[in-house]
Length: 305
Ligand code: CP
Ligand code: NVA
Image (cartoon, rainbow, N blue to C red):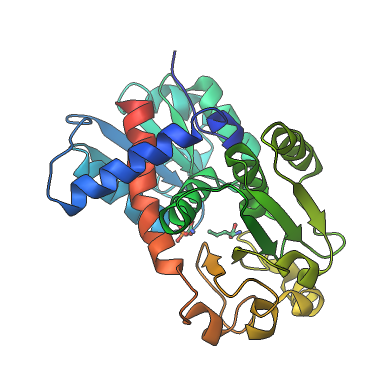
């Protein structure tokens, strides 16, 4: 049976295995060993929204795995003229070996997966961003060796990245405190799932409103944009409300001196994060961006290979 990656929950029992695979795949690339399990395979990629990292890392990843990727914009497809998601899924399944989809509405990714006979991978929707979180976990594990006893503080909007990060942290047994303003908390259903999974894995998953409380003694300080793609109309209101949630040197000083700073990028410098912090010695945001490639190659090899 085909396996989809729609939510971080789909990886619940596979995170450790995928991180090991990603670490090996990264090392093989570094040492010039060929790893081509997807020879002759094609990935179809549909992006309703802009992308730099996700698009390029999936395309390059497919090439390195011996396969090929096709970038599809709904604007140029018949979907843009009203062909249904279901018919698009059925048709593409006759040509490609897997579909990557970036959507405004998470229900569309589910609908596509329901009608596709090949694996569907969520490349970000309004609820989750699981591929990002696999790269984040890989980056943390590379630097810290394991997740045991670590505290990740997420400060900012309770958005798609935050939702998947709560789940991912719970699955690897890493404590996570998210600080989000009232009215911008993470998805309650996903949070509840993460809190339960965290309990089983002996880690604490919580949401607070005070950014300093979250950052206190943190090993990882993570933020993302305040205004996600598709939310542009909330820009002014959010920029007013989120000021105290900026990741700057004063907030970083609350964390451990060894704290790593992460951001999924793209960053809005001077808003959710200051230049001195994102460009500072504690920032690993470009390692994190690089790891999108290695983590996704592991996902592709597992789901499509
Ligand atoms: N972090 C991330 O998904 O970046 P892109 O929007 O550039 O793909
Ligand atoms: N939360 C952001 C992530 C971008 C990678 C957005 O959805 O726009």
